[in-house]
Length: 243
Image (tube, rainbow, N blue to C red; front, side, top):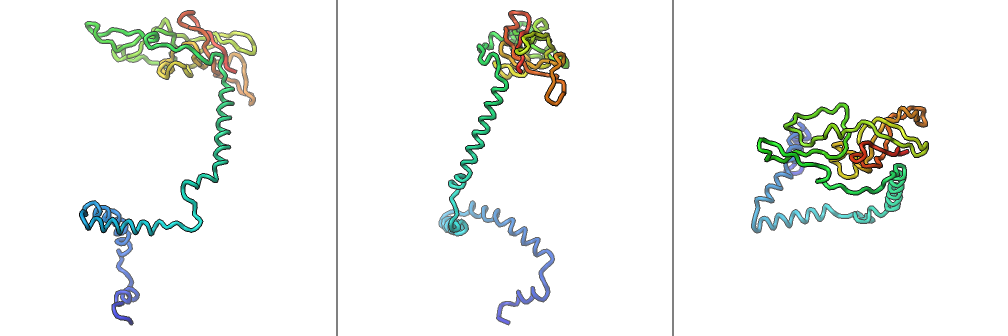
């Protein structure tokens, strides 16, 4: 047996310690932390030598195999596919937009001062954080009002609407239908949240009375309609059904 190989010989005869592999795994796991800590602590010539050594190690480990493509060229193969996907998505969006082509594509913007009236509160009427909505609104049946002291937006009962006069564009007939909710107010997301009904607002109405059915034979319950008038001026809501 060659000299100095007594350790290997011992391992062959008696095997390793029971916790050898666990200790090895932990040592390897800690190696990165240990080398990082060492790199942060060293300074001067020792730090320079360490960085040189690590740079050389990284350069050796990052050898590129022959015929390998650089990262900036990897996406070139799937470029045609990407173009096709992009055009398909654009077409889908166009179809969706055409499906819901609204009668009023553009509406006049409403200023916040016109939409809300400042309410003075407090003992000496010095606080002005409350706002009263001056436009027509829809409030659901399940709505529970906050305590008056904590309510920021007040929606007057006189301007709350539950029904709308909806015109069917194909039938050329008008029906008074129940409002289910406000889908989108083009003015602002906060107006949608508050259920404000202005010209151009998309609302959901109950069309079960009209007897509309799907291709599968099921009765259509809710459908979208767009408000075409200024409800606060007319005292009623006129809308056109989006079919």
